[in-house]
Structures are given as C-alpha cells and as structure tokens.
Amino acid sequence: MAMSGGKDDGAPMMEMNTTPLIDVMLVLLIMFIITIPVATHAVNIDLPVATPPTNLPPPDTVKNKVVLTQTNQILWNGKPITDGELRYQLESSLKYAVEPELQFQPEAQASYDLSVRVLNIIKGSGVTKFGFVGNEMYSEFNKAANAR
Image (cartoon, rainbow, N blue to C red; front, side, top):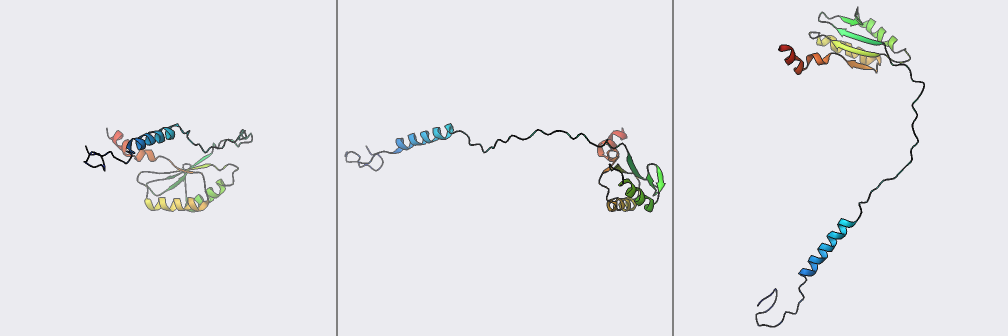
C-alpha cells in the first residue's frame, strides 16, 4: 500500500504525516483569534456641560422680500424700487443688530437678465441671510398636481 512518498516494497514509511498536526494548529489559531477581545481605541474624556447663552437676541421677525415681476419690476416688500434703491435698502438692512432675512422670489415669467442683475446686487451687498422663496411652485410634482 503506497502512502505519500512511500514505496511499494512494504517497508514502513519514515516521514511523519504532518497534515493532522497542521489541521489542529489551524483550529487552535482560529479559536485564539475569535477569543481575543476587540481592541478599541477610545479615550474617555469628561467634557464640561454646556450652558445655553442667556443673552440671545430675539428671533428676527423682520423679513425683507425681493420679488421680480414679469414686467421687469423689482419689488421690495411689495413696493417697486430701482437698482440703486435696492442697493440702499440692502446696505441699510445690514445696520440692524440682527440681520433680517432676505427672501428672493422671482415670478414664473420674470426676466432671467433681471434675476442675474438683482442676484449680483445682493451678492455684492454682503447680505448673509438669504433664501429663495416659492421654488416649490415650479417643481415637477407641483406641476403634475395642478394639471389635474
């Protein structure tokens, strides 16, 4: 009977079969890997408890709204103004203790050139609280709902 590397003459095999030894060693290695605790790299630090500030300014109730109409008019809170008056209004709104929010709402058929011109004026004025209003009217979902 021939084993790995043995001869057919019936002489006993002189090499030791290491396959069972390797199998046992692999099982032991896997057992050790499973039982090792997961190394966590956490540093526990006691942080101070934050206290909310008591001198908060009141929420801004003043909102300025810029509307661009189909007839190329700029409306500031419902009143028509020119480019120069818009610059003045924006600069004067920055003098408040709490900067009021500026809302920008072009109508559906407002001129793109007017929109770009007004947005450049707003950008140049240094206004930081700025938002687009009414964009939800032009979404695909809203158009489909209004078509019904």
